[in-house]
Length: 161
Image (cartoon, rainbow, N blue to C red; front, side, top):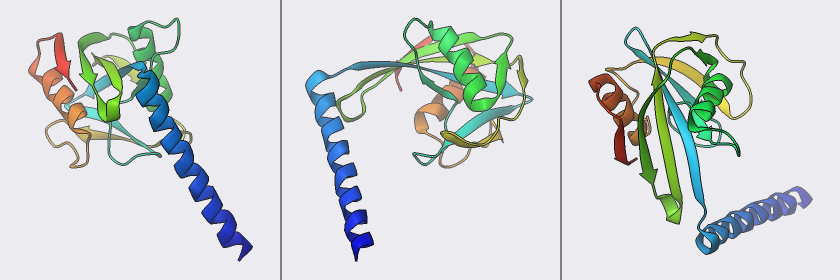
């Protein structure tokens, strides 16, 4: 019985924290800046799966204070995907407005990099190569569009995620 009460209390606390976070976003409306990386090799693209949300994504994350967009992309490629980039090219900068947030994402691409499978653990639960022409059904739609743009050449692009 005590276990059920504790589990219910924990769920209520988490829900309250989530609601508090949503309120904070609405009141202070912060802008976030992130960087993602398209890693292409022999017609395949490297995607990651996070432990905190479903689906496949391009490796990436937030830009740290004092870090350039390219530095963030290089760091995230290493941390999330095990890739050390030799060359990197800006594909574009995109805007996303989920749930009242203002997110801006710089997307870089590289076809020249050293790759070593990352150790499991942390926020990334799986890293996998996919044929660029046969992306998984549960890939983030914005990530799928960016892969198509990279494969089509051109850029840099700007627009909505």
